[in-house]
Image (cartoon, rainbow, N blue to C red):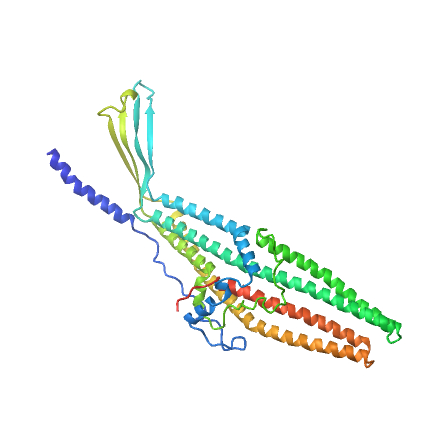
Length: 477
């Protein structure tokens, strides 16, 4: 009867193992569905700011991929600065460390789904007699069978948190690139302001010399010389101010690159050069809002939403029984010297079932907390999308309007330059006093400064649009 009895137990044991395996694959987490994006299907068109027609997904992808942002920067100095920042910037290094931290946490949580097996040995000395017990073998310590998917849900939540952290690292990378571009623009614009102040000093100093000669010849009054010297003093004060702005911009750029680039902007083209930033156009109005799916902050927000969804499954599983197995297989003996002799084999299996009866409402509160956090994650996801849509819309509006602003500033500066020439000719002919020349000088200097500011704003906006689009999106046509 012994043989047949063992044979009948094997199918039952195999069926029990299969049942455990199937039940361990269950999950009580709600079925995840991506919330609908609470934004229009495309960015604004049909207004003075957006005269273009909407672009299809393929056209949008082509428009973006054709720009320098998605290949390489045409400016070799800027390429060098970006490369230095990607290698040495401390914010990026910190983001990479956060990714490693999240990866390790995910590994810890995933390991909880597997049994912990250890080699153990014990010796017991009873107090009332001299008999001792010795035991050694392989032990399975309180392994919880994941019937209701609690460990799986916690592992899934850790996985999504890790993926969200990876996206945060990608967002940091895009942000650093955009900040380097912006810092480069600010440094070049500040250098141009310094050059403008120096040219103004040289021009006004020459005017003082001219007026001094005219005073000596009796053709001008001494007051006109002092008025011209006043303009020189104003330009000198402006030069000091612009040199300070330039020094701070240079230091900020060095910090962005992690002080990993020694050359800096030494060989950079002049800000006023027609080639500077000429190929930095990024996109056009009418782009489909689906481009936002490439933004890492939106992807990260969705990963956190999925993590919150998985936490609900873990909270639900806490209402059901938990089964833990403690087992040990090895050898046992009353004498230490006979522990590993024949006939000393031993097997110990201790199952433990725990069914929550009363916990003061802890499990219910944990489930309510998980649901509330999921609701907050949905709101955060939707808010991230809406914020991204606004940022891209603002940058597109800036791209359209700032181009027109630069053109208007160029035209205004040309008018002021012609006015200065005419005013100086009229003064030398004795038709007007030098006060009119002074007025035109101030207007021309202000027009030059305004043109530099407009060009700077246009290029800063290009960097903002690159960041708003999430770097270089990939959209299938």
